[in-house]
Amino acid sequence: LIEPMTKELRDGRRLRIWSAGCSSGQEPYSIALCILSVLPDARAYDARILATDINPLVLETGRRATYPAEEAASLPADLRRSWMESTGTGTLRFYEAPRGLITFRQLNLIGSWPMKGPFDAVFCRNVVIYFDEKTQMRLLNRMLPLIRPGGYLYLGHSERVIGPAETLFKIDGTTVYRKIGGSLA
Image 1 (cartoon, one colour):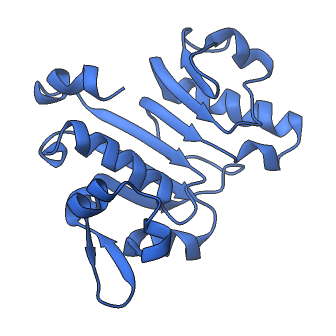
Image 2 (spheres, helix red, strand yellow):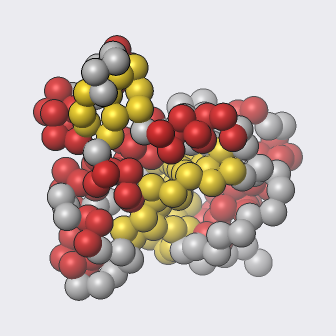
C-alpha cells in the first residue's frame, strides 16, 4: 500500500488509514512503523492514522505509547532500535515520529461517526466478530463509503465481507479486501 504511493505522497497526496477497534494501540503503531520503514520522513507529508476504540482506558495506553519490554519483543529488533527507547523501568516508548502519525479517539462503532473519509485503508480486525450478522452487515456497509475506490479493508481471520458490500470488494489476500465499486445504491 505505502511503497507505490511514496512519490504521490511527496507530491502532496494524502494518506489516511483508520484502525477501528485499535485497543491499546499495537495495530496503529505497527501501521506507523510500516509507513516509516518506507518513508522515514512521513510526518513531513500528509500521512495520518486514526485509531479508535470504545474503551477510554485502552486508548490512554495507546496515547502513552509505552509498552512492557516483553510485549515489545514481538517487534523485530531493528524496528525496536529505530523507533523505540527504553524508559529505564522495563518498558519501551515509541519515539515522536510514529506517535505523531497517530490520533487516538474514542468511538462506538454502533454510534455516529464524525469522520468522512476517504480512507486508503481501514483495519477492522477481530472487531466485527463481536456483533451479530445483521450488525456486521450494517457496520461493513457504513465503512464502505469511507474507503476510496481501490482502497483496502483488513478483517480478522474469522471475519468476512458479507451482504451487499460483497459486490463492491474483491478478495486481495486471506483477510484483505480491495474496494472495486463505488457505493451501495
